[in-house]
Image 1 (cartoon, rainbow, N blue to C red):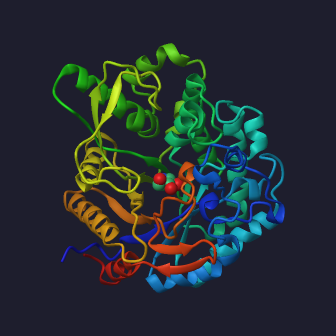
Image 2: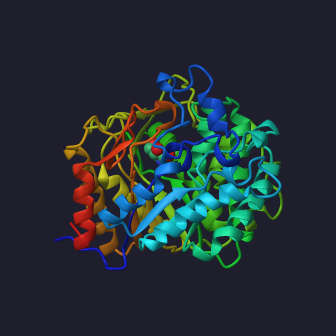
Length: 440
Ligand code: IFM
């Protein structure tokens, strides 16, 4: 049997806009995702998060389910527009009350609450003032963090500032695939910096808290040893991984990436002292891993999220794929974990998301195989000295998968949206057994 240490933290993850619904209740105001999903043509099928999995009302039932599955931790996100509806100023007591009830119920069931402060739902008034490309948003984020920390700090064992700032910056402001849907490469690069700065300022605003950040990282391989392919892979690794890891863990942006981006935006938005703020010691690093990337040089320019690197092609590695079209390769997770250990100062690691969408309803054997493979990859990395302390499956519930609407189901628990009935899939039962025996 592949065993994990008894202290290994077994969890599942969700996020606010993807499951809560109740978007106009108790003083919540629109976020950029409400605006974006109300814009025709942005979301498959015209879906929105207005009702989602109705978790805002059904959280007691959902927590009872988590308890039956034996989860030790639950990763969720706080909706900024519930807590601070204008994105500035005083907290909305009703918004905080919801998260107090949620965290208290989790604690009553012996489940650690792991909130993320920002999982993409920027209050619309802040986007109207410039969004993440504007430096002020980083300051506002720290103010919001301090309100959340003041209200909930006594019951939270670990805070995550941001989820996947790469997506917020480059899908939100470069490709426009995500809210707010802007296509402004230079703004995207500034957004990336201000997100990191917001992380650092928020950490400062939560003294004594255990604080980490979650990045969506990948393992990048060049398609060949041809110098052009090697350069393409360097660029993608730079934009996807090192643009975030280096400032956080080495207090410096990678020079080669700054060079790649030089013509796009320059570095004036990076002020003296910013990198010191960003690189304040992390209590943990969260890793969201789904798929590896095989990268090749392309002779034709292709617009993509990889601002400054148009001549790259994300190649098909020929492996089986999930319903999202993402290649399945657990070795990528193993190699990524070892790379983090080799290239960066040691910091406790958590896989804060890993999972897959498949077109299977309840008998989800493909998901079980995916999770089993990736957990084995984690176990191998741990035996090789990687300080991996926990794993959160994405996702607890089927939910609103952003621009794909409800067409993609990542949950280990099936949600029948018309009735909101929850049914644990085979993978949920399998995961519960893994947790109970502490291994595979
Ligand atoms: O659903 C998302 C989540 O919000 C962030 N990480 C990736 C997941 C699957 O696409």
